[in-house]
Length: 333
Image (cartoon, rainbow, N blue to C red; front, side, top):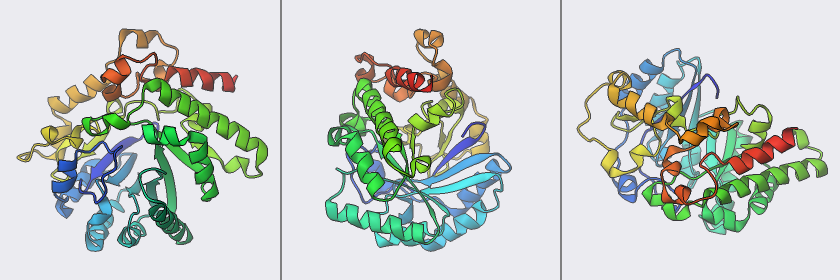
């Protein structure tokens, strides 16, 4: 994603699920509005020729109608320098119908968040989309539950499902997700376990060239170029709420106190505002000791929401997961 700008377009925050690791407040999920087609056009006008990764997210974006998504795509398809992706839990048949409209689909696997029956249905939907020619990308949140389930076990399951690429995402510790947010040292250890799984799997399988588990493999390809551990807000990420309000931090729109229902400024005006510039600057701030760290260009201090929690402040590990980065460095030598 280097030299590309990330746009998270929250077309709705509504969701029919109530996952314990979700960073969005339940009140937001229950009462969110949907994004108008006119607002999507405004966003597209701002993106223009920018090299961008555009993620259609929520909540659950497939709760919006097929017709609405077709109108969105009519607009987004004109962004020639952008990669468009929809992010969906694929928890019902309707989600598949909507997802098929998008070439690139991101979904998540959490072995503990759903019943076995629902996981089986999720896998069937993933296979249907792949058979249809869609690109299906898998991620797993490194929650307390997933770590307890076992990272190697989780990766084995994903491999058995037929997926060879997966992204392991550190938790976004908003108030709603604090109970599922592990101590950073546990996250580092989980990432190290994933790296050891990759190394061992490549020794024992014939499709080793297809296996890609990030952040480990992304870092191996170039630690200074990989931005998966950096705070997206510090990289001038743009998170757009259904009403057009923007934040730099994905966690910002997850709590009711951050949503301004009377917001009337254009997206372009907000991006040029002192408020947005200040938010980006705040997420670029790190502890003094970070600047002397050899991994500074890789993590930039990591997630600032995590760094400011009591979980991180009381940990022997930093929010940039230095223990894990040291392990990757050893493997690269």
